[in-house]
Image (tube, rainbow, N blue to C red; front, side, top):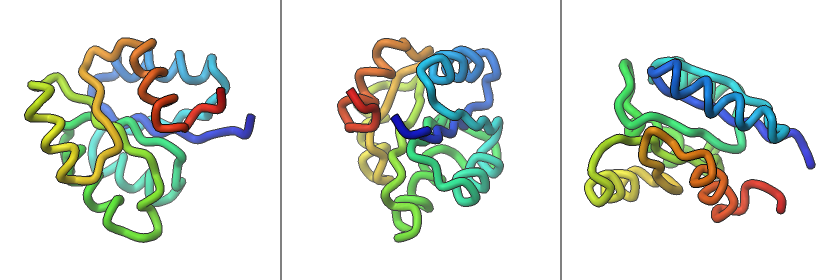
Length: 125
């Protein structure tokens, strides 16, 4: 398997740490940002394979970052999953409108994370 790069942009360090550890244990390179502006800049500089981004971040929120990346031809192929603790139907609508590839409700269930990631053909099975 090639070394896939994943960015986690989440202001909650405890949430980020558990996801980070899980993905690293499965062989992925993980980069972390704790606010929206850092997450956006990291995505532009590193061009990762996947971004897991919290809906509510300081600086830019996850939806804004998703829109900026998805509507730029240089970054449109990056898979972006929004992390949210909101109402799933409302969040799905917002995620769809900004071009996100999926959403995950927080706290993230690691098996659900792997299922979503597999469903978008990111992880080689």
